[in-house]
Length: 382
Image (tube, rainbow, N blue to C red; front, side, top):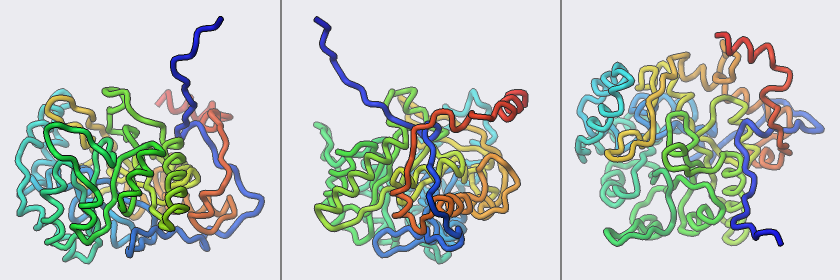
């Protein structure tokens, strides 16, 4: 008699293991609609800049809004800990690799100044940009009223893993229905990777969900904790939860694939997997206007006891507008992301993001290597 199986594992998939199947008809890319909506806010491109200190500051937020997207300012970061954050960012960028983790732990041990929260939000609002701000669950009750008073537009409650229920003997967990009733702005919550967690979060009345645990280029959560689900599977499972919640409530709550997207192909696959928008970090950190000066680091890097991130050198490659809209001068898919999305939609014969959700996707682990021996050998030699 065969021994019983203790656990049954299901296969999951990341961006490099799948491919988009072109449609039977094609469409003009210029006629595609890629609007992204969160409650009463509509953005002309479905791209969010990550709430990471190397990506988003006041100036970057204003520029991202001008270009049609949304940038999220990290209220737990250097922008609210230091009166002159640019000096600190320069120090981080210039640090030696062996010193950077200790430096980041020191930098992020500085107390958050509540007056700077209001100052940063008001500076963003003064620029005319939509102001989205990110807080950790532990700081939400403290900072959400300050953000509301300063007239922020969207609140993002974000941590490595966020759930609707939290077990603790030391403090009361964050209750999203209460938060939703206490502040007037839309609330986006993340991160999660499963059908059940996503559905429970949506049932609390929030306005959006971030999908992804550990896929970011500067994140080491998967190595340190062993936790995470590849982004294609995570997005598909959360999209199923979104559709189930729509059936039971009549309300459509968008999901945002956050992390692991390194090129236009990954971005397009996220939408076919069911995403309504994507949140980008390392790609946008390459912009000349990004505050990281060619470097990028994870939000969990400065944890005082268990860092889960690494500083990476992404370089400074182009203006933000070129990264989003081209023209591209590179062949790795890291520029003209909007053009890539529209072209993929045209190739699949779809005219909006909802139709993109219905496009066929196949398991194709050879998609990145088939016939590419010359490219791969050139890459290795360089």
